[in-house]
Image 1 (tube, rainbow, N blue to C red):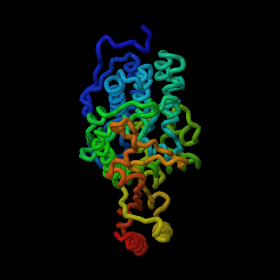
Image 2 (cartoon, rainbow, N blue to C red):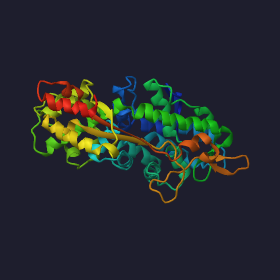
Image 3 (cartoon, helix red, strand yellow):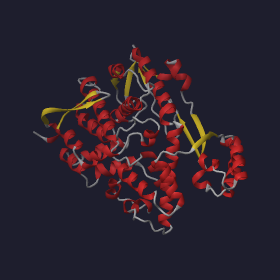
Image 4 (cartoon, one colour):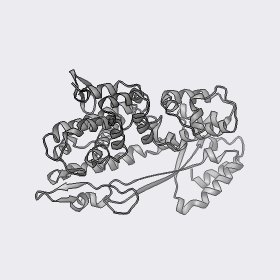
Length: 432
């Protein structure tokens, strides 16, 4: 039997707290799960620094990737099976893309990417197309198969229906992480009726659409997403930890490029600091390696790197105040000057941070980052854009909410053994 159609002698299952079980019957999927590149995801948390806010948020990208695979498996094997709009030849491609969509994530994901100007999707494609165990498994299906999987993840594959399963405004990726992140953080916001959503999904030429009779389940999903972003993903304490993480990496990179002699050579970071990335070096980095270096750097001679690492490791995070950059830009420059006078480096200890989210967007041709809208399938087979039928969704469509904060070390300002008057002036401006 050809490899692409080969089944395991006995179905394998992963016990899962969100989906109860993740079912694996395809040999290709089982082999991909066993690759070292996929197993690495066990050592990368799904929610980065969120574990410092919600102590249960220790789940990994491995958990999430299996969950996305399981949702897509249910869609293609149960919901779409036998429907004329669905090409069964795209089944394995959809399953592989779902499983591997996050395989290129680095440690602490988005914070790591911002500092070193990386894109996890590019590394995902490099893993799929490069000299890796993942590539060898995919190439056994067909020599062109790795390229097709990379195209689905890169959103360039010709069958947009397949792409929409893992990359759209309501896809398997979002449906898994909202529920999984809600479960592990212990909040109730991210729960929605996924079973109902799966039942009302219908394949169309370019994307998945949803029967109008189940519109309220889709509304519930969008409101869950909105709440999760503001209550969990953009939580100010998590953002404080991300600020620290970002400043640690910036400081270590700056020291390295300026010829600083570390007590222990950070050889894992050499190519990253020099922005001469190799896939081999990238794959050696995971969160256990990063945390090891943070503990080692606590003992460094450089006082800033040492202090920032101590704060992160021991959860002595920066405090924050609300800050409106449009109205308070003069205040920021004044604070920078005062921080310098107080002997506190504002580049590392006075940090402006903002978060913004668009909970749902409708299609506006010609705009940057056009988003494919969610369509409802009416009884007369007409397709209607969701916000035209839902008053709830219409109320939040296209409305970007943004939140700004200023982060700083309150303990250094409370220490009045030196620069007392300047520190009191700073605290007065910050209103703390």
